Length: 227
Ligand SMILES: [Zn+2]
Ligand SMILES: [Zn+2]
Image (cartoon, rainbow, N blue to C red; front, top):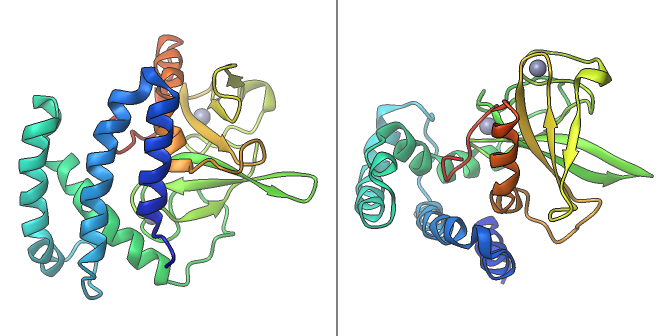
């Protein structure tokens, strides 16, 4: 039996929650979200446009289930944020649709070539001697190629203005910042850790978000736990 992307994320989140006590609480929250999203994916809804009223109707029972779940586990500000809850409900559906679509992954563009949303992280995948940089869509999890030295927010390409920060604690996760527009995103480096699951390792390195914010950077796109 092959495992779904959600099974792999859940397994990785359980592993990291045990390994990184400082991130355990956030990862336990994520585990509830991921189990909910897996159940939406398992509903195997037919193909509909992402912004269609049909899809909204079809997802309604799932959305209501998520509202109850969040009232139980989330801080009040997240539990009452309809746009955030809607995003979490549509996400697994969008991911399934994107996976079956033939989208070009090589167009150099800052937004997702399938759904047009912002990237939530970068992923460095082994290729030849080094690694190739991809961006990971915050909604549908499509990955598309993107130049290593190019800010997806403002187009800055001067290497001096695109610093990379790492912390000993997370050898395979780094902060990629831009001095021109003061945004950052995290990159998960699979050339350094092939066991990493980008969406989950990005969450677990929450300490880097706190650090980047202290330095005055704003994240290009918040992740599924609102960080
Ligand atoms: Zn997308
Ligand atoms: Zn920039």
